[in-house]
Image 1 (cartoon, rainbow over the protein chains, first blue to last red):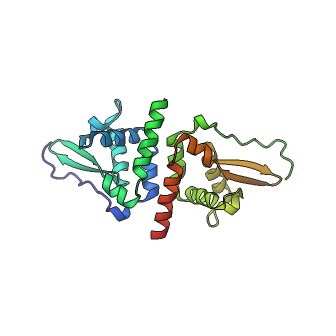
Image 2 (tube, rainbow over the protein chains, first blue to last red):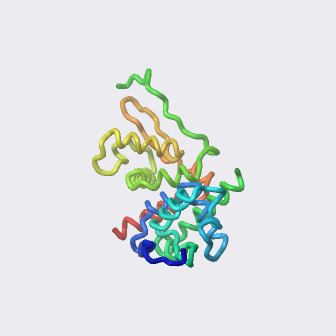
Image 3 (tube, each protein chain N blue to C red):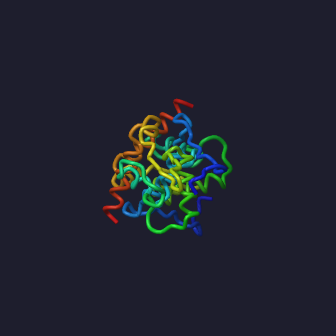
Length: 114
Length: 114
């Protein structure tokens, strides 16, 4: 499992290719938004399962992480058998200043009301 | 056409039923975001075709307006043969303060860079 030979590398869009549609769509799913909130709260990298809400099937999780990665919201790196994820906070902020903070603030309001 | 008998009334969610997921999903489509930007810029109500970008088929437009309406972003009212749409700016702002303004700001940045 620690042999990454033959595994496809993760693809991360450069900052200038991060689109507003991609970011909003990625954040529009409650499970994906929960992952982003966990990563933002951790202030450090988390493995896929650490950041994920509840017990989602592995294939569902992979799908969510792929959408977050392709939107430019997270960076994923293989560390042995594990994948570590970090929020691309600064990159997203360079592209759309203040947007991610505002969505996280709204998510916090939603959660405290629920 | 001015006879609205038999037409289904438009359904608008109350403020407390506006969800973050619904708002972000609705805004994640470029055509829908363009409609919202047009409505925000008009500062008044616009007919469906006035607010829509380019020449989209009528069925596509109806679909987009329905998603925006169900997310709580717009209010649609029949005026004779026409449907007039207004942005529910204050309602969305009561629910998620500053969010819509921040997304519109980001959309403006995207457009000026494109």
